[in-house]
Length: 193
Image (cartoon, rainbow, N blue to C red; front, side):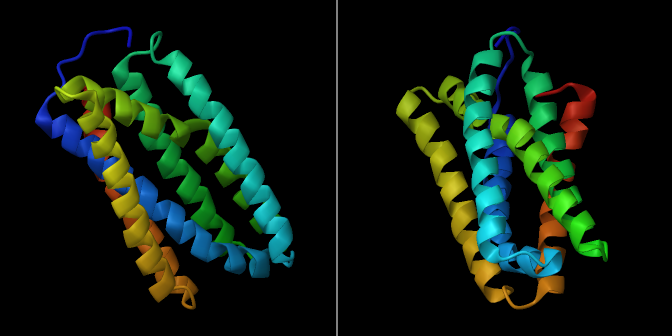
């Protein structure tokens, strides 16, 4: 990264929380795909194809973010990841609030583009911060992986429990959006890592 940053335990915990939220929200989104299909009047296969394309875009952007870390400040990367996940899930929430199937589909696509373009910075950034913080690089990678996977397990359980209740799924997604906001906006606004 372009500027040297003092990485402390508090910041590593904040990044770990972000990875947890990121993993959980991914699994909750999978549970929402059939509901998105229903709201857009498109078959589930079409929704999954567009979801798959967004994952491909996400993979490409992860590589781009990995290359940008040397030229961007850590604060910038931190802000992009937080604001990206906030706005992507915000657009997803809006998709369920509009009554037009076309608008719902458009908001779903916008959500996925924002998510793939910005939230893709979270995992490589977390790995980089954790590797710099831990004395053994394998511990840093393991920390990121563990919080992502624990979040995915938590999201899968919540998604399964609330799969048939759209309102509860949206409430849980909103809680994740608020958690991301509270976790990141204060630090990003102050430029403090």
